[in-house]
Length: 70
Image (cartoon, one colour):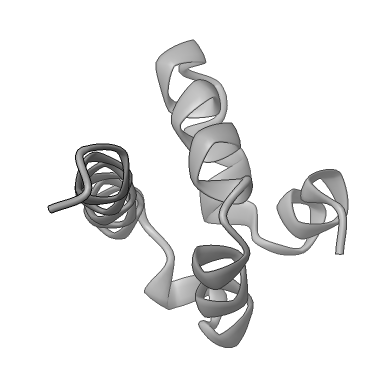
């Protein structure tokens, strides 16, 4: 599923995109297939700004671990 289609079907996340930094964060996590799959499994009520930030933190941690071979 493309990001635009996902946003069209998840109104809370689409509203979050009105803030540019949130749009950038969504694009970052969307690039990770595992996170994308997790987001697809959740209903619109489960997807909010707290969940988005949680996924961003997980994504950053995983990237740091992978990059530094920890």
